[in-house]
Image (cartoon, rainbow, N blue to C red):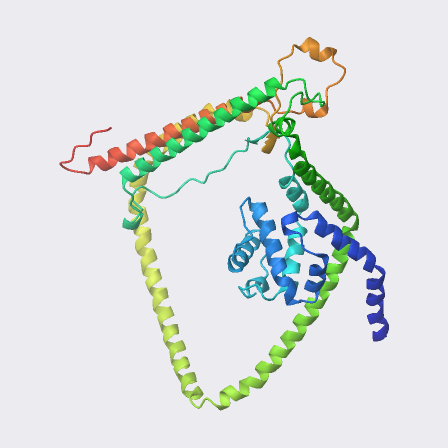
Length: 450
């Protein structure tokens, strides 16, 4: 019976051998070119071969760097790659302790890395995000973000910072001025870029074969001026097409890969049980040896008994002290209730002011919520046409109908700016109130506002 049970998985593995090879090959081709491993790397990792460890560390390093939007080079040290991969996987929720125990030089643990890679691959939309990130951009794009960031409010008071947390106000003013200078420089460069893009879009208006676009992008205009550069762009487009075809093939053969990973998990579970039983046998054999070669064990046990009795006595004293402190605390609470009633009116007044400030932005909050956008959008120059011309046209594409207009984004950002400006004024007023309270406690000091 056992022989038949062992033969059944082998026969199933032989039957899905060609399909498994095709699935692994499609997965490798669908990955980014800079981190594309060989199909043999995954097969070697299944048997925990050390030759596949470095390739898997590099694969996970590049994938996680692209997910987090970081830059990387081929010369990055293996130690830095290992630390970043361990941190990033822990950040995404991969808490397997065996990964953190792998050597920092990347010399072992290929099967553990295969398991981590498969866990990351199982997250929804991973390959789609990588394909979108590595897409060849032939148009002019800009980043658009209409999301609202929830900034947590600090709960610390003005006098809770210690001496280590004190910062010179002049240094903060210098940092603020430097930040404003860099922001103005960046804003001026962005305006110059927009002017140049508008010139290119205006001069090439009506030249594009796609009526939804109507004009050339910077890349397309550069190809017209320098036709010899089309070979490099053609190679990139062919590589992207091959990657998309591999992704479609992978989606069809994906169940075969996960069936194969189930066998990998079974092998790891069997080896883990064997290692645990061996460790238990070793511990059982070692315990009598340790006690027999330690003549001071009885003396140590007596000391531990005395310590436990002392701890019990201290615990009883602690309970008595807690009861006394609790009684004194209730007396203080009763005395402070009257003082809190006086402070309640001031707190209620502040709450009312804060509520009035938030109610000013209520009309914008009560408006129907639009779909928040975050990511890259292609810049397309649209001529203002009257509604009659638009209605007399033959058809309007779905992309043109669902396009996000710059005026709408500007209007929404202006509303957001006004809300932030009101919050800033409220915070400034709170700071002035705190400074007035601090100045009243300083005798012989005259504070002159700037």
